Structure formats: structure tokens, C-alpha cells
Amino acid sequence: MIRAAVSAASQRVAIVGVGGIGGSLAGRLIEASPPALESLVAVSHNAAVREAIARSGYRLRGEGGERSVPGTVLAALPDEAFDWILLCTRPPQATEAALAALPHLAPGGALVVCPNGLCEDRVAAVAGAARTVGAIVAFGASAPEPGVFEQTSAGGLTLGEHGDGGPDRLQGLAAVLNSALPASITPNLAGARWSKLAINCAISALGTIGGDRLGPLMTHRFVRRLALEIMTEVVAVARAEGVALEPVSGTLDLDWLALTADERSGGPALVLKHSMLLAVGMRYRKLRSSMLRAIEGGRDPGVQFLNGEIVQRGAAHGIATPFNAEAARLVEAIAAGAEAPSVDQVRRFWTDSP
Image (cartoon, rainbow, N blue to C red; front, side, top):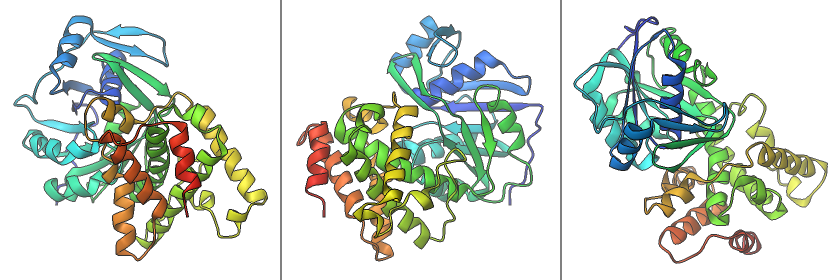
């Protein structure tokens, strides 16, 4: 079993994937220059991103105003040993990125899994549980053009061990990351990850189908009701998997948000849950679905790692997941060009639902 061998005073960090999340993290870490950060390397296979950053630095927008942070991005990890390698790819690329990164880990180091979904399981299958750490991303960010990274909503990261990496191993990483964005540690990574998965399954899928940012979409009652139904199915599957869900950002309780049979007919509880989603929509009003951005860029939206994962795991437990199944179908149809994203598309989803 791999135990902690990482000094909190000398953290060697690599970031693989310089999209909205990875670019925001890299730029903010360079800007903060925390004393415990011995070195930072960012890697992207995208030549346009590397060239833009070499020319103009990391152009950061959002919290802190607009500014440029000098830096570089490499095409591949150098022949060095890193204490932490943050995988900031999209879910479909997580396993491939993990395999490429493994030879560059220092003794006691770990891969830090940032994509949405349940990618820790996939990374641990090739790296081992003790070399796998989860990082649940609670802030929104996009890369509207190469080298430009816009933070679209406030938030930070929650770190957790996938296996037994040793006591307090994550303290050093949390201290480094906390210089750029709020970073905390959870003893219940599975519970925090599944709660975030429930949110992602609703927001990312409906944001893709609706083709708009979260704020405008959540003003529609039928969008909020679909979100509740999608999340309710995720909660049911999580319970069947024996997962104790954690509140999202310390406040949003998915166990409470899940609909009961009685609530589907109306009543004060349903009104309150709609109000909660309205507040979420307001707080994250600029958030745009990463799956929609992937489709626009000609890439796999990765819906099978979100809603598709729930459908698959639900079937294994004998749990029906029709809302997640239809959400996955529609996202794939949009990716294939067979359907177009629009609010009317979401309205039809609700009207035709069981």
C-alpha cells in the first residue's frame, strides 16, 4: 500500500488539460505563487492553446477582474516526478490521461481526478486506489477561446481519498490549491461525488438540450421539474449503491431535494424545492453546459459518464431511470445533428415524459 511521502513544504504539481477548469486553476496558481508550490507544469494537446498562452499568457476573467498571467503550456509531461497530477480532462479522456501520467508520479504521489461523473473508479482501475484522489469542482469555468479562461460562478474544490492514501496526505495539496480557490477535504468522497453527479446529470443535460445558460433555463417551471425528476433517480441509485450523500456546498441536501410520490402531486414541499432550484439558477446563472460546449467543438459530450452511468447502474439494481435515459438519448441526438437544442426541446421532453 502506498503511503504518504509528500512534504507539505514542497509540492510538485502538474495539470493535464487546459480547458476552462484546468486553465483557470493553472493561471490562478501561477498568479498566487504559494510558497508550498515548488513547481507547476500545465499540459495540453491543443496547439492553439499552447501558442495563445505562450503569446499572451493565461487571460483570466471573472472573479478578480480581467488580467493576464505569464506562463507556458507543454505538449506532454516532462521527465520529472510530480507529487500531484491533476487530471482536468473531460470524462471520456480521463483513463487515457491517467495511463499517460502514471510514469510521472513521485513515490507517495497521486492522480487527482477532476472530471465530473464517477471517474475515480476508472482511474483507480489503472492506477490503484491509493494513487487516486478525487477533486470535486464546485466552481464554473469556460474557455471561450484559446488561452482565455472565464470563471462563470464562485466556488472551489473538495478533495477526498478514493483509497487509503495515508493520514493527512491531502493537507499539503489543499493548502496549495487554497491559495487560488477555496479547497476543503472530505472523508466521504463517494457521498460528495454522487451528490455532485446528481446536480450534473440535471444541469449539464438540460443545459445541453435547452441550449442556454442555467439562469434563463431555470426560470421555466418545466425545466425545474425535469431537474428534480432527474436528480430523484440519481438519489435512488446512490442509495441502492450504499452511498451516504453529502450536501452540495454544505447546503444543498440531495436526500431532501429528491421527490417523494406525494410531492409529485404538489404541495408546500414541492413549491419549496422549486424555489431552491430558482436560487441555484440565479447563483449559477452564467453557467453553460460543458457537454454543449463539447458538441459545439465536435467532441464527444460524455453523457454516458453522467446520465448514461445512472441508467446502467440503475438497471443493475432494478431501478427505473426513464428521465435520465431520455436525457441521454436527447443529448446524443443533438451531438449527432438529429435534434437541435432549444427551450422547446426541453418542453417536449417534459410533455412527453411518463
